[in-house]
Length: 105
Image: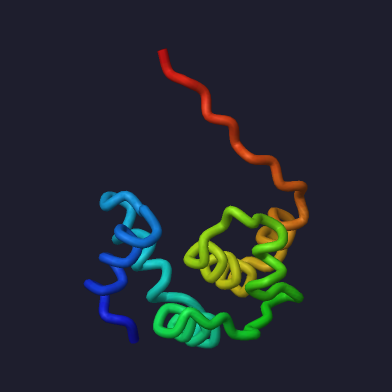
């Protein structure tokens, strides 16, 4: 199990997660399916992606769908595929459309 303080710091410092969102992300990571968490932990500790596959998707195929997705989001998406395969697959099969940010006046 990854130390929560180390995980929190890395989410903030390496992946630019806002501090107010970090605890929610950490909670989601800590309840992932055991095989997905093991793959995440390997990546977190070594930087190496594993070949965990869920519903026909793996790390590489999700990154192909959205190259801007950070590794944390990829592992959470794999877990979503395990928990809610129909909804997750439908979302992944939609064409990727980047959000446009508008300036507030």
